[in-house]
Length: 255
Image (cartoon, rainbow, N blue to C red):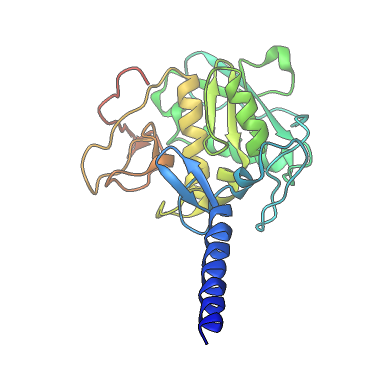
């Protein structure tokens, strides 16, 4: 009888140890402590590829988009009309990483619609924008890149995005494909709103804008607020101009 009880205890211990080991496989180390892949932490649910190492080959999310790509880009052909009433003309080029599952012309059309909207940066009356296909004619380029490629591109300028955020370097706006496809947890607005926000936010950096804080709970979030990391009580907002007036929060020094 004692041998049977001992065997039963040993079996139970072994099962518990195996369960703990299996649970350990699903944990990552993130900036805020352990990250569980089954949770809603932005470094897990939004980008499970982080659990698989760096890797250079394409990996596909359950939602269908790759988390890594070849690092080569397709360029949108043609040019947009000039948007804006007055001021210097800022020309931009649009590129999409190959094998990312996204049509470069569709992405370019979305970017054109955002930057050409009267609620966007041209509402100042002191800036005009136009998309061009030629690299030497463009003042900056807007890229749509897989998480692994966007991380490498941003790292060239000393920025660590952990394959999660988008970024801007001088002359380069890098949109993370994962955010383009999924937005962020608990954003509280449709995907199209987040897409508009991320274009205006990163291009805003290219135009010299710095980060801003949420003015007060329940207020619209300034477009230069880091809405990807949370709204801090504000409500999602994708535009720098609201009701024809520049909408801002308190500047965050140095960022």
